[in-house]
Length: 404
Image (cartoon, rainbow, N blue to C red; front, top):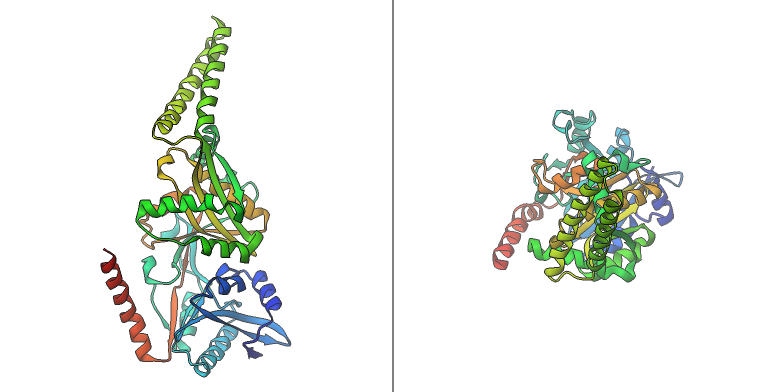
């Protein structure tokens, strides 16, 4: 087999899409997303012109970073060893100072209930030994999201037919509740990006954080095209109030028409009226707070590639949190992704302690907890490695103090 760095893009994409390890971080589009701050190299082991193993490497100031790669058969020990050997030679020849690899092979996957009782992947020790024999240092089975570039733990739902029917009973009820509260969910294109950004900005203000700007999301739209799934939920407060009043009037008329007949039916109608009155109170309260007309409730941005999908951003206007719109957004996004051939749908990273507020919501969609190995480092420059491990974190802490 030959090691090459002039990989044919079409062959690369086909190999990536056909792999069980397919993910957005190894796509050619992702290299373009990162092009403002990173260069890239695309390398492969080929046999008779066919790719056997490949990786897209992000390169910046001596750091070589392979996110969720290389893409190869991790049960083939000889193939993994050969790729690492060739990668090291290539890194030395091109002036790399530190090679950091975050492999796509998972160490553990199980439902939330059984995760702590599940054994690790049987290949765990074999893979750790292979990397160690090639001079790579495993950075440990860390628990904090901030310890690694990509989260070591993520929440992944396995998609299938009628996926909503597989959700917990409470989740299905909340989705129906969103419908009853007149929530509408739409998939949008780049022309409606302001609607998506509004919900993101609400989240930024609420949490005191800064996410991505308009140019970033427009770039994703241009690069991933139909593989961008952006969903936004809406409510028209004025129409909701009118509909509630109309429903109450209709229920009153039905109750009058019954007279003394069907006491059971009358009781059911009166219970419905109580429920609609509660809705009317909610919408009237929102209206009095100045939330009139059509309002954006929440949004999400998902990238699809091959059999995998990654929800990379989501936002919500907390003033409308009594409307369970995001449950409907997630459900419709997953249904659309499944129609495009997605099998594994990631809703993003969580803390390894599993004591995470994000997990409380994400667990509503019948997911697995997926644990990755984390990062393997091959140090070519000891000084660079020292500065990366100690200097960079200190700089980040200093900048945080300045912002405060």
